[in-house]
Each structure stands twice: as structure tokens, then as C-alpha cells.
Image (cartoon, rainbow over all chains, first blue to last red; front, side, top):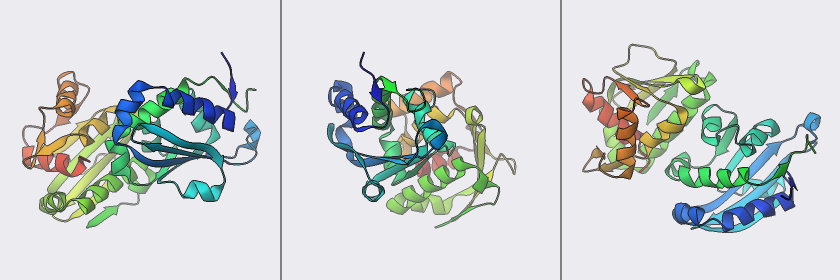
Length: 141
Length: 138
């Protein structure tokens, strides 16, 4: 299986492909509207020298933009999720449940929380599909 | 709307989630705000799997969120972090939580299997019903 360097454009493309190819996602996410940005805080000790900003956009079961962006673009998203590299790595490896991480303050969310909770299945599905991407993590590659 | 986090609660990230959910719900729904204004009593949510617990002290239009379980709550909801959101997904019909659809049946299944325990469920039904209404995002 092809491995993708984590938190890069090629990795995002692989993730997007997983989502776009999931019939289950299409059904679950039929009511979802809007973008989510993900900020991975820098961790030079883990080969993440700068923060990584990712912009993802979803619309009624379709996947739209999916790209590495700058801090300003990340701020434009409807929902902004932020966390340390180690936390995102745990999420991507299915070692940490994203909902629990939010409740524990390990990940931060900015945006309408009621919308997120109403659509928690969509979030969980997107993350499930992320865990299916064969990821080469910056501190492992 | 008067929602206050005690100093201790500010050290518990789950407090902010509860605050944001309740504030978001009652801001968007006049019906939920009306319910919130009537609420009086103490309820707690205990999530042992993430070692987080908060107590909600309602005073008819005022809410104080405390860290931990304090003030001998009439209602204590004990479950896990991944199941507690199922309570937020309960639909409200005719002004009451609705247990006869998929979301409702899921919550009932958690109760019957012991994954969700609600102390005071039968003694404080009014407070529990109102809490469910203002916590529901549906």
C-alpha cells in the first residue's frame, strides 16, 4: 500500500479520495455544509518545524477544496480545529477519539458547537476515513 | 442569559463544551430559553472515562457550572464521553424528549445496558426533562 507523508498535499489528496469514494460518507454527510480548517501546531522535536494549516470543504455529501493553506485562509473556515502534532497523530492513528479530545481540551474547536454535535456522525466518518490513509508521520519517516 | 463558570470549572475543558452547548441552544431557540428560565435545581454530568465531571446549578435564568460533583445534585448523568453526545441528539417533540425514533432508542439502549446511568431519573423527572431539552441540539 502506498504511504503518504502526513500533513502534506499528497496526503490530503489521498484523504479526499477516501472521502469522495465513500458511499456511507455521502449518506451521513448529506446535511453538512461548510469548511473545516485544521491547524497542527509546530513541534520541531517531531520534525514539524512550522504549524501546518489545512483547509477542507464539504457540501451535502460532496468534498470540495482540500489543500494546505496559510494561517489567514485557515481562519476563514466555518470551523477551525487546532491541536498539537502529537494529538493529531493520535487521531490519525485511531488512538484518540476526536470527540473525546475536544471534551478533554486536547483539540480546540472554534465554530458553532451545536452544529458539530448535530453532525457528529459526519465528523466521525471523515476521521475514520483519515485513519484509513497509510500515513508516514513526520517523526517516523 | 446568565451562564457563569466557576474558577474551578475553568480548569475543566468539558465545562466550556457544556457552557457553549447550552448557550448556543438557548440563544437559537426561544422555546429552549423559556425552559431554561424555569429551571431550578442541581444536576451533574460525570464522564469517568475522561476523568471529567461538572455540576450545573440552575437558578431560574441563571446557571453556574462547577467542576466536579458538588452540592448533592438531584440528577447525576454517568456515562462515557463518546455516548454523552447521544443525549444531545434526542429530538424534542411536543415540548418533550422523544424516545421513539432512532436517537431516542439509542439512548434507551444505553440506559438498559447500563452504559448510561441517570441517578434521580424517576424522582426528578421535571428537572431531567428540562435538562434534556436545553442540552438537545435538535
